[in-house]
View 1: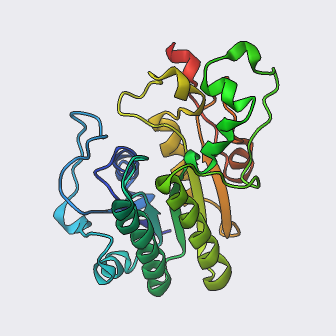
View 2 (view 1 turned 180 degrees about the horizontal axis):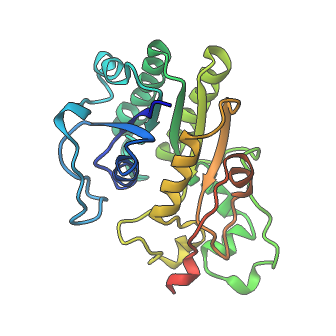
Length: 268
């Protein structure tokens, strides 16, 4: 069987670079290509990480350029859409160009090119507003004595609760994925990814509950790329197996076999 032809966008970012390297290690399984708007690591990427993308497998493209995006996705089986402005504090103009217009161009180009699946990087921040309520507020404020033994999980079926334009843009991307799945038959899997950092450890106690190790998020993306054809649309949380995790990862475990290997408490 021929390798799956995969395009990873935003490849010089923290998560996308790790995904690209993982896929590149398996040439018999993946034929991997990369896209980015510049040939340099993002500020969030780990220092010194080797990322060697041959010129013939690289597309220098800004997602605002619809035609260039269309040319890049031509012939791909799967697009892993990681390119975005990742800053919760980003202004509206940056969010509009990168996260809204850019996401639309990727989905539309994938439809036109006959791509069979898009794996879309959403964010756990699509559910961030639940932390205004207990017991999630207690977890956020590190008042662990007020947290029940059984934490009620926030699930993908619960209403999104974004808290600023960045997280709202991720909810828009999920809605776009649903549209392209239902109307155009494109398989779309949305990943509400937790806190992934260059240090690969949860150094902010208030974010430890939603921390995700680099190898856990790469595992989840790989399992979604390989997921059965019958998965036409779904939303999975990408968070490690942390003690105070408050979002549901069992759905991803059951649907695609996601098995987090790390937990925040192992780094304390």
